[in-house]
Amino acid sequence: MPVRNKIKQFIDDRGITRYQFRKDTGLSATTVYALYDNPWQVPHVTAMNKICDSYRVQPSELIEWVPPEEVSDHVQQTK
Image (cartoon, rainbow, N blue to C red):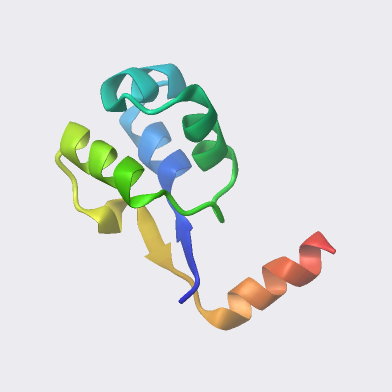
């Protein structure tokens, strides 16, 4: 099941910085920057729980399913 994260959109839509997001969630800077910069990195369940608890949101606000053909297109573009 291909999924990607929507962390960048989530942070940007709220008008907060990655630093504020890190402080709010207690996630490491490495994790926050990796999730923000790489939509194909799926948050670990622990990170997902921290984000959902901190912002009181559903996981569906943080990740989305991607059609397989879109994943194939992405893989071909990065080669």
